[in-house]
Length: 74
Image (cartoon, rainbow, N blue to C red; front, side, top):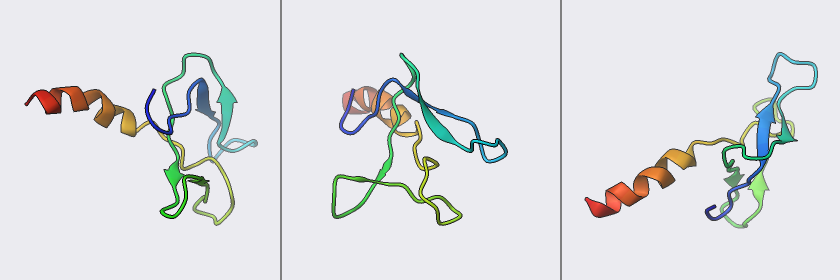
């Protein structure tokens, strides 16, 4: 895929589940991205409760990447 995309992994669980939000292997899942530190190429994993976790993985960049081709044409 692109850059730092993580493929074949999906987000499972949630705040209200015993195991919490976590990553699971899932072939064909939409690519995920993490937030990256400004001074490194390493992902930053900080949850709102100040613990380390997977909550900052998301699929949001996919829409921008998919729309980039149309934007370039315009």
